Image 1 (cartoon, helix red, strand yellow):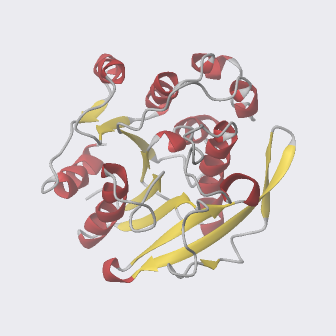
Image 2 (image 1 turned 180 degrees about the horizontal axis):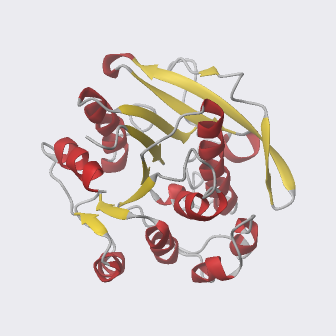
Length: 266
């Protein structure tokens, strides 16, 4: 077994959010691979509708306190953690008052997509990777679930490529039926530019809709998983054309072993 350490970055995890295919896989897959002898770390955003008291979240002071600059503005990074006792696993939460202290996950009560979802995705992806650096924990595989994790692959391949913690890590992107309508902020591409990431690297996001964002994540990933039984057909065609290592949709009873074997192939 070559890949010992798996970092899971997920948009949704149950029991903190209602059960969806993504939230369920993000909850039971880490437990399953941990029980098969791997070491794991799991991250998700701390949305405002997660009850911190009921879920016994607490701040990890030694990991908090950093500021991430997005669009020339400083945003404090707060890290909290909770334990799923029955699974003997911890979940780390990325928190920030500007981005996550609201009741909706990606849209408000009336279904309107949050206008700053682009910055929330940037903050989440960078927040996870900066926290892993602070933990001094070197992952072999980084497995991303959901479009809000779609920027992790480019950050790992470009911005953090010389960091010894990530230099040998392989990135897997799971695609779900989590399409959103419309587009992210028109200045999204500019906000992504960091050391090692140029305007030409982000050209594919000229029209930052769900389809382009997902293709962008796949472009910089090493392998792809189909997490939902049905996904956007355009994305499906793109995956096939990319010729990247691919794991098709797995049934509920089989997916932990299938994913576990796939990690070693990657």
